[in-house]
Image 1 (cartoon, helix red, strand yellow):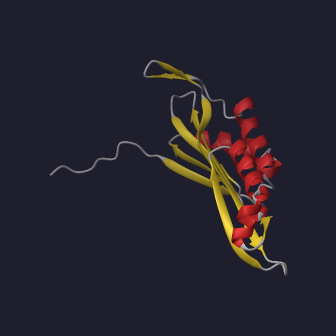
Image 2 (tube, one colour):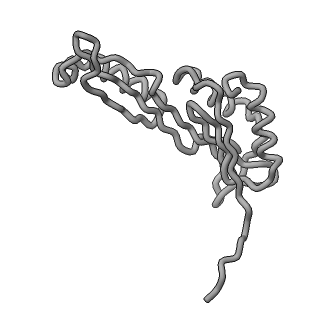
Image 3 (tube, one colour):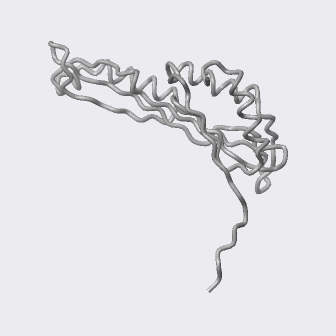
Length: 167
């Protein structure tokens, strides 16, 4: 039988945020600024004959949390709605909050539980060295995965140090 032989040394690094990102608008502004400004110096590349942006959204999810409360303000039910984009998150939240039939069925009034809502966006990045890696933003942390060169972590960390929301 053959042995497994290590072929690369991929790393993961995580920064826990001192405070959660306030809301989905702040989160989306942060993600869009990374895409627009390319602070990691990512470069476009070609994969299977197709031109690929050096930094792009790879996977994202946004979760709306709604509690249903009775007339005394007691939580009697809850709903979570997972959406694939910020636009779907906003539309879904608005629809749930306006759905009186659902409120009647639940036996209470809908109240957004914004402090428990979740946001996640993973960016696929192409380093000038040719290495592909991912930077995942959530409400509470930033994680760099699948990188080998410590210069990648240093570049992301140096940029994150300049962003107050990522303290």
